[in-house]
Length: 154
Image 1 (cartoon, rainbow, N blue to C red):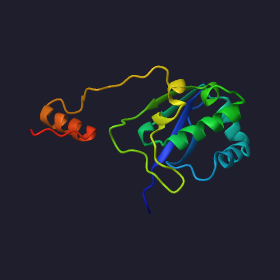
Image 2: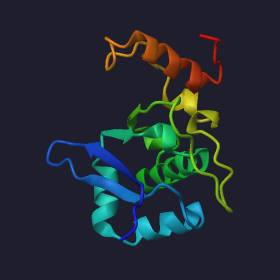
Image 3: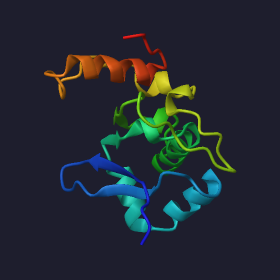
């Protein structure tokens, strides 16, 4: 058995909290192909159309191409032109961790490099304090420097 990273997109509506869609971290095929797959499944269409809030976890590992593909599918399934078909979107991730993985069909750019980013997330909160390692401030400082590619002589 091999390990695979999965992207789970969970939606919120009154009667359920099941995944809206789940696939591995890369979008294979075209956005039109993925849309056809979604449109061929009445249950999936119903889940998309009953969605009110879309949460995307680990968005830091989500590439620009996949972010834009999810937007394309949502706009088309919901028959609505605003970003993500007008759904409210919440995303969570640490952009100082591993970046998206490039492939033959994807250059591995971050989702925040998309022109959709600011329209999708007009309100952004950035946490810059590490709460996990309060006792080891020296280690926290070292990790901050490494994650930003700026190592001091200390």
